[in-house]
Image (cartoon, rainbow, N blue to C red; front, side, top):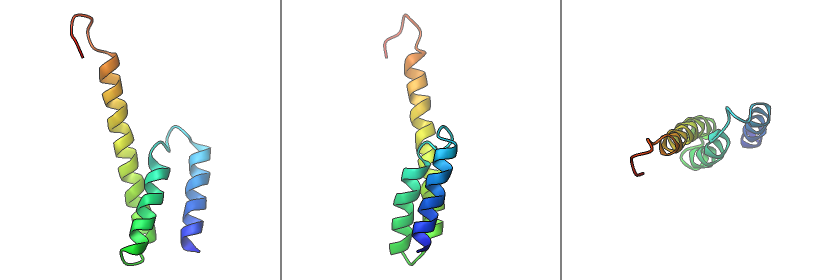
Length: 76
């Protein structure tokens, strides 16, 4: 039941701020499931998964920005 409540809250947060939630929802779901099976730490797993998902999404955005802004004389 806690897992369902956490997922519902995460979904509402993602709907309220879609740009800020990029990567968080998927990470929270995966982290919550992993945390549940690793000793009933669903909430901690969801928090850690959300943090990692945001980190990974930001890394991918930086990579895309770097590819688009390459100088005209250089190859990617």
